[in-house]
Image (cartoon, rainbow, N blue to C red):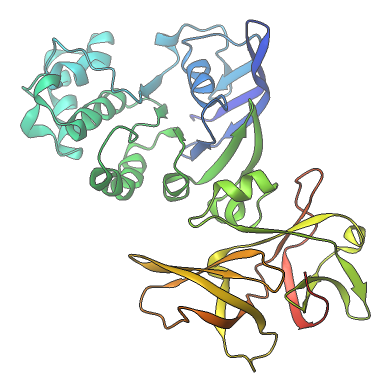
Length: 372
């Protein structure tokens, strides 16, 4: 059983904590993605799990066994690095074979193991080539093959697609889940690409400043971000964030948007009269007729086609900018006055001072009211 558990991990460099009380449990066969900006501590955490560096505090357990003080070669961990880290004087075959040779397997077993993983990764035709003769995509697959070859119970992948071209990155996003499922390993995957995180992770651990700020499924992270910071990290185009001060009438708590009251469902009474921020995903907004229920008046400023979608910049009656996204080919205004509607289940409300999300994230109605 290859469960991975991190307990209250702390790592300091020159007195500064780069990892601060990190606790995480990864189930057997699960893929958890560490996602966050550069400097969040993602790669350092991988190196701690691998045994390359030691924590200052806390414990690391693999399969229920404390390996905090166990040398790297005895942890049963495979790792693929962002920069490939291939031996330049060795062929692709020999690079992939290194973990098998370290275990002193028989030549026949090494050959079978290398050829099996190379066929899986579609690089069996370049096994005799040295790294300088390989494309970036082939180098990436060779590095991944080396990590997979020993069938490690725990697999650590440090942003392995960052240095490959867009086409291969897209292809590998589709292929990697199948490969990892075939391997059956417990996987910790680092990336700064939110699309990659959502495509590959069973769960996503969002990191910032050495801490895990939110842990959940891709759907949970996207639809219910814990903070404004996390909400901004997911989505293209980015989420719309507007300052508001919730009020209350006979129908409940509401915020104003272009002379329309947006009534919020959930325990938002605590937000009444406080400085807050409402978050609206661009794809959760749509253009509607002026006489449609709860139509919010806006002015169209610009339209940008982006292949599979069209993004429109609009302004509210108070001049605040909002992005509206719709599938390519869907009709929509290109200039002048227009009206938009909010998906009733889409609104997010945050405390402006702390950035934390408040209560539930549902909108139940839109009615005429004060401008926001």
